[in-house]
Length: 270
Image (tube, rainbow, N blue to C red; front, side, top):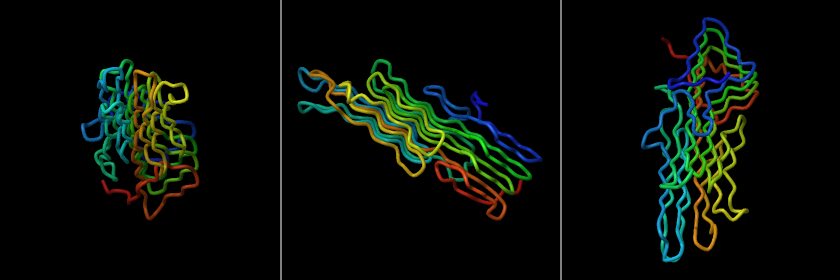
């Protein structure tokens, strides 16, 4: 099941909650997940365009979004003593406790760049049970990949129950950065970084940075000469989101994959 809309998803139960298939609040490219929240601090900065001398035009890459970790920087394009600054990656934001419950941040765009579409932030989901939560399938809140733009950060996942068992996948990974005319991958449903878009091998400018996953940080974009008249910087990948698991007396049984590593705490009394 894929949730959509403007607000975070919350599921509260007196009994057990089990995820056997897939429950997704992930972004898809430019489409944000439910509860994504982009602010000026965590959003990736835009890349600049500038004439680098009489015959070369420079295009700087955009920064990736941040949330649980910072986004990668867009590459600065330089030639002939001139330059176009790449955008900085968005800063880490929010709290370990996921209070308030919120999702991730979007990337920046290449200023005036044709077809530049930022990756959106992953959404937010809260599962709360009086008895227990089991994830045998996939519970994902990943960020979207950017098209010639920065990737979107992973979102927020909050699990609260006396006992939580993860035998499947819980992920809130960042999306990959884009490059000239190409799109980075959406965040992965596992612990592998989302690949940034590849342009250098085809002579279309610098590659985009990989999205963050697990303990791997977001990658920065790279700058390459596209042709005799353009130098183009790739855009940064996005940071991971946040995963919080509250149990009773260390009641987390983790035999699956959780990316990034969760923060843990006691089940709150409400």
